[in-house]
Length: 381
Image (cartoon, rainbow, N blue to C red; front, side):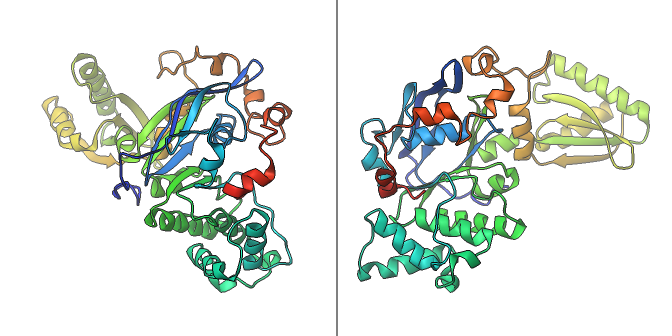
């Protein structure tokens, strides 16, 4: 269960990010299709999806780095097509690995970055650098040369740079990429620390176990389409399971027939009946059903002269939710919208390159008026 799920958002009625049918196409290729996201103040919001699902393209549109083909993005109730500079002053983001000077210390790199972007100049602002380094747990290494930092320390210094303006919204794109387990834990603790300070966090990540631990809400993308959005708690409930072991193999088959028959009648709370083989090569009957129904399952079995040796409730996992949401639809399986432009126009080889920073079409679409100097005033890159 998420460490942050039970922490209420600060002022739940305040929308920080709202996209309205946000769409981005590169020629005939639709990278993001009709996207409607909602991120409230105080959320730690996980943005998930396979490579090529449109995550980085979405982040670039939110930051005003590329223009949408259709729809719009509102941040702090302002349209970033018209109020981009005002919005950027309230955001700290890492979309790519920040560039630092290897022979300068961590704190000197922050000073240089602040000076280059017109922020926090003068000795009066020195306490701010120290405060930021304390937040990211780098205060003991403030005077250590950047080249001597570990990968995790470098990543945390990048987040420190994003915090220079004390932003309300912090956007992190794959902050744990390449980190060892200790580094991943450090980033997790940092995200929770920022949430505790009242920041709204927008986190794009492939590390589902970490997202489950730190996020209270998630959205899942597939081929440019939003396929799931909601609270982590509610989504996990949809993937709870009950595993049943019988002493006799024929009882397993009888139980499968029983629950399939009941599902066809009125037992709608069992969404799927399946069989697994455990490590001892014994068969397990697995029901996709709320764990609170375990005693009712046992009663139904007994009423039909079937007696389970073991019944194991399984808590839902974000991994199970994610795999179901991003699975390729099959005949007779769960259906996704396979008729939308994002699916019909995007072959797999191409979609995997949509979010690549080197994609020529993407580079040509970048707003040339958005110079690096303009972006650095509100967003640390």
